[in-house]
Length: 469
Image (tube, rainbow, N blue to C red):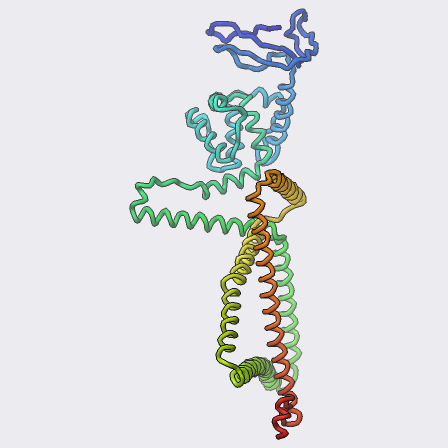
């Protein structure tokens, strides 16, 4: 069923509105004016060139109209609030002329980016469209449709078409605060691309390098600022703390004044104040000397421990050299060199790399804003999805069952087992060495304590037998 529409004056041809299904319409055949019935098809419009492109005639209410009416209601409600205060209703807003509608869109964009404050009557239409498209691109607005629809979107923006501007207004008013932040950051983070031939000049290259460094510094400062905003501190709390401290300061000043008045009534109060001041200075000096004494005691204790370790090492080396052969000494040194080489070249680098990765991960976590419950749920879903993909890849690999790959995997498994055993034994050896050093330190401490008690050194078993002779 087709219903002809009025033609644009001066244009040729005929305009038809296709109404297959899904609308309440009086445009069907056999219905008089004011009579409508529901058609269970989707509404569709075919407009030939040279005719009015109004999507629906009067008396036609379809799914498109319902969606647009919800958008218009949302737009009007938000435009009537701060900071716009337009005082529209659905009828007055829908009856705006294209130029007025473009001015409303420009006012919303100006609220997001103050540089957009322009009277579009004093601006060329192409310049207006270019400026608005540039800002919408920065704000990452994606018009519906493909590249062909983009030209339609641009043309609709130039002429102030309602089907083009209403969705833009709806999208902007839904996320005004977020878009303000995005527009603010775009002023500093959209990089100016300098042609490579200009970068051959040292001055231009240095300036471009400084520009990039300042951009990175801005990123870091903005990130710190956002972290401070989300850290729980607010200017209101800081002001309350400052006012509380000022009140406490005033109370202390008043208390000091009262004490001064009480002291002035005492005889020789100046002399007593001088003595009290000297007493306070001497007490502070006493505390400083006590702290210095404790620090020197700690230094002496550490020095005694170092001396004991060196003496123990000297004793062990003399004892080993007394009854050891050159071959055994060389063998022992080779074993120590191998062990130390393994620790330096294999174990410590792996641990260092692991700690660096952990540090990088923790820094990344700290730099990100605080996560809510929804963010955690999203991360968990991503983790589960990745684990599922990993399991599927492992199953596919196992289903191949290639013999060469099986042998290689067996060798890799054996090598990893040997490597783990080697690391475990190295850790056990390191722990044994540390335990031995701790025991030697305890023996030295006990020996020194015994000397302090009776003035003689406690002899070991072999030393007692030697002294008996």
